[in-house]
Image (cartoon, rainbow, N blue to C red; front, side, top):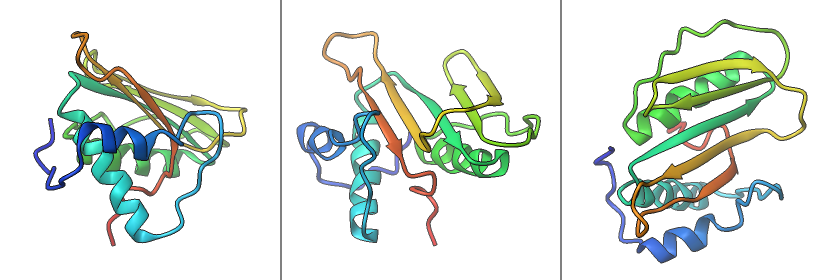
Length: 140
């Protein structure tokens, strides 16, 4: 779990900010301040789930691995980044609970990161948000 949460967002506010990222529509983020709010919302929710699964759709393996690295670090995980570099669009899945991390060819049109919150408890967070920007956690 990450301890980087220095925000004052409530769980409800975080969920409301992330609600437009419903895995169907392509919501865009138009400013650095909006990016910061979305990052904060994601981090608020990790404290109310047991773990998070990442699904990354990218144009290239390098782009996907970069997103895997930055998102994982932000969420407090260290995945195996030694995945086979394949040509073309890719899908990367990372499940920190099982340790599963793999890369495969992807023919879909979506690009971005899916964050799936997993909780064993009924009052925990069990939601999925995406497609979030690949570079959301690239801090300049």
